[in-house]
Image (cartoon, rainbow over the protein chains, first blue to last red):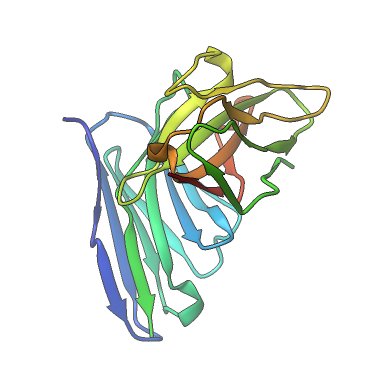
Length: 112
Length: 109
């Protein structure tokens, strides 16, 4: 079944550590997104990519970087994690024809 | 700039009562609007989009351009409707989906 898969699902790390969250998809969609979910703040867009060579900053890109290694893979990195980056992170792909987003199950990151 | 406002963080109703989740938007062009839902321990998923004018699980939403609103309605709420609901907007060809802060709906027995 075509899907969006995120790894790791849960991660606890310390301040200053480098963290990578990975996303892979089998839907064949060109458009991929990383969102952050915080209680009371909803979903905020971190980065998005329309293809391997087209990467764009979202609303809250500071402190994050991304890599689009292939159409199917879009990774989010925290170069030096800080406690206020503790959140639930979602990867999503977009169906170009309908505009519908398909989400992964989320990666819960805790920075101590 | 595009913005989505969901004024209610929490909404609690009794089973069988009507429910309306409010969504207002700001966008200078012609927006495409969506409602996404997140049930407990499940992924975010699309509930409905304004362009298809469909009813899903008894929910409907009408785009009111004059009031810049896209409220989600259901005449008779069910306990299984309890979830977090997000209104979202994308403008034209930018394919950048902006979400509201969400409304947590609780349907009490």
